Image 1 (cartoon, rainbow, N blue to C red):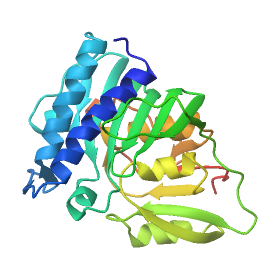
Image 2: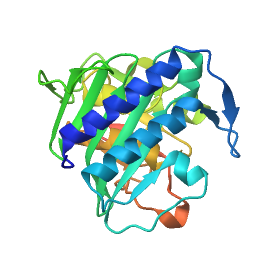
Image 3: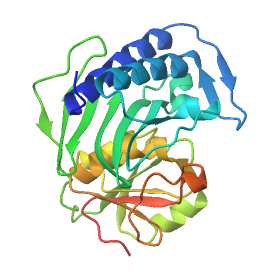
Image 4: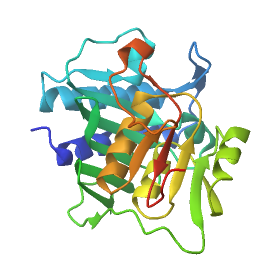
Length: 262
């Protein structure tokens, strides 16, 4: 294997297959030191992803959520991978289907390739490069699809914008931020799926005010930026990666489709 977008997608599908196997069982739930939710699926999916990345690109350093939680934070250069094997564990536990597998390749602080896979919905979003993204229907036990639709943000609707907001982390600050824009509809969604709804032209803006980790956002950012969107901090700077001095957490940010920041 070589590490290209199709390989990343195949690795994500393999992880999604294992996640769905656990999803259909009466799985147990535990909590990490930071009180976040953990299931058997998180570790199993991460092991599949790490193995796949190591086979495809043996020299690639990987920052992966569960490995970091257990104290493994490798040194890395300007090119590395960020992995969240099961983003939206609360959605997984609630069995609402809105959880994702996130894999991104970072170069010089920016996501240049990424995959967000929603195994319960058979939705696959892929950024092949910083300027080209596609989506496809993909079953967890199937091949990487060859029938693909280009991803492109939509023109801002004259009747008002659709905002997407977290199901688990909605805040009064988010509502205040949204009040500055002509919002006609607010959709709730979990995990990195929110980035992808903007990329697919199903929403126009997604504010995330509060703490996230780099592995939560990198793949979604790769997808939405390749579809023509932007991801900016609240102060209008690009959201960058490799923030080791911060412990790989992010400042508040906003995902913009065809919307001018105010």
